[in-house]
View (cartoon, rainbow, N blue to C red):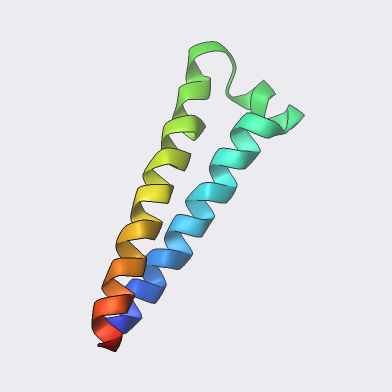
Length: 63
């Protein structure tokens, strides 16, 4: 369970990086123009939720 939490945290960090790239960089904004900018935005939000789930799983695995 602890390994799964670590892998989930790494995946969510990658999702956060994708969200940041898609919203905050010129190349990301060019790639995700207009309404497609919602893809990295919601990917970032989902990654935050996954990171919280990973933290809870890691906490309970350590107990």
